[in-house]
Length: 138
Image 1 (cartoon, helix red, strand yellow):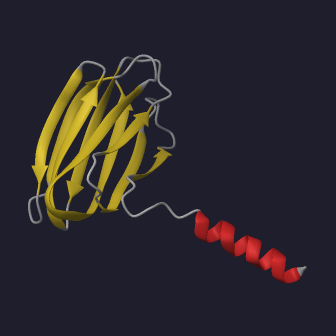
Image 2 (tube, rainbow, N blue to C red; image 1 turned 180 degrees about the horizontal axis):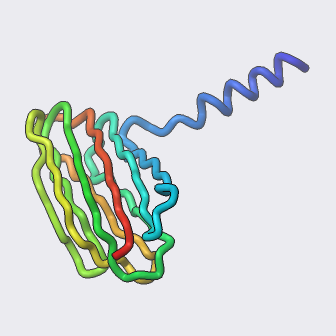
């Protein structure tokens, strides 16, 4: 019985790790912020042949957020785009040694109160993307 329990726990623990081509996003609410501020980290271990997307939500009832984005890439080439309810707000090509950073006001998708970070692999087997996304209601 104990061996079954240990096996079940190991299966659950090892099964919870995201695949290497997943865009992993972890967000925290900034304490004592009056404007629904959030700080997020993003990471992709290695890219597949399709774009990686992250819909970043807010609890704010406002229609816009101010976004501060910073991304770095270890290998390859990736096109990064920030999209809101009114379309693409910013786009840049990431390569190793050429990090991208932007601050922009983004209109939210009103149905989901979110905006989207899209990362599309271009060439060179992209891997090792890391970054931060901070946003607050305006």
